[in-house]
Image (tube, rainbow, N blue to C red; front, side):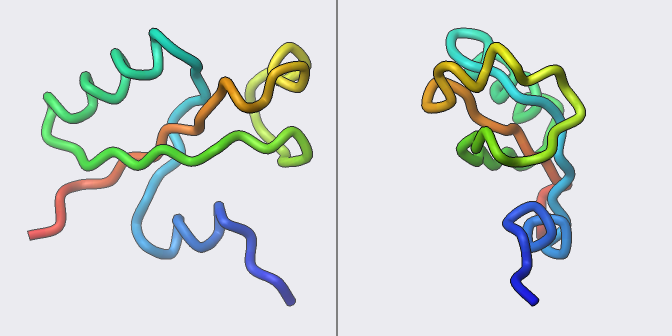
Length: 74
């Protein structure tokens, strides 16, 4: 059985937060870094099941990224 990218990231300790495009994407990523979290951005794929309303994102999926965070690994 193939593991999804989301499942793989979850096993590595990443927690999915939100989907954004620029300029808000950079602002949100920086905010998470400022509060001491690691940030990982993953491309949005229209076929993925997401909790957010994604109909508008399906028109231009290349603009959007999924923001994942986790506590910094020491």
